[in-house]
Length: 59
Image (cartoon, rainbow, N blue to C red; front, side, top):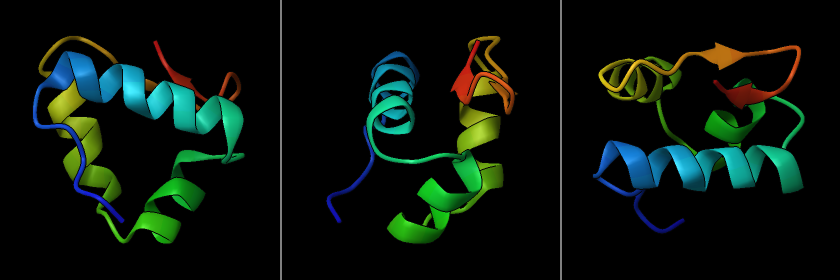
């Protein structure tokens, strides 16, 4: 797995695309890519985005 984008805005776009196209949940994305869910949610909360499990995207 390549490293995740460092910039939160680019990370947001990358994650929402991955969640839309390949993963049914953030938990499954994190497990498949060996990353911590907390790390992702904290980084995106810095730009006021939170994960919505119903929509399976950061909003």
